[in-house]
Image 1 (cartoon, rainbow, N blue to C red):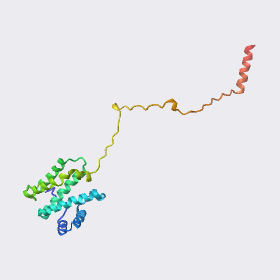
Image 2 (image 1 turned 30 degrees about the vertical axis):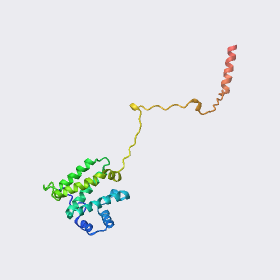
Image 3 (image 1 turned 90 degrees about the vertical axis):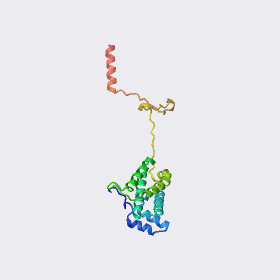
Image 4 (image 1 turned 120 degrees about the horizontal axis):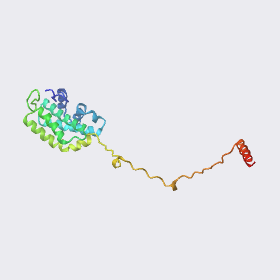
Length: 203
């Protein structure tokens, strides 16, 4: 199958390593090494939530006595759904569940090359009940912790796109400035010429 999730996120050797470990703290440390996403590496709170998410999924798979192949596919489905949900801050629960259903059905029906029957009908029923009562019951909490925070910046603009002019300051608030007007000096030659012209006129 072209889009098979078998051994996609956990290979057979990693599943054997997880199966041999019985200590919860050590199991979580292995999950951190095998499955922790790059987005959570720099965020301790997100890393803790993601590791717990995978830890309890693994515990569920063990309780169901899943084979290594079933564990690999189930953990990969959970990883793919979580990655898609955290990448889109506006992704709805309905869209998330549709992705989960597509992955699950692609590994529950023998219809080569489109799907392969890894899970039985009872497995599908158990997985749907677990995911519905676990992940999707706390869907908004996962989104709040893991999804990027969206910030909305509003800029208020006057109707019609015309900005209101700012009010002028009153003259009483104007700055006082002394203005000195100096008398223009008349050149001496022009003054004598004007005097001679006046005498000629008098003659």
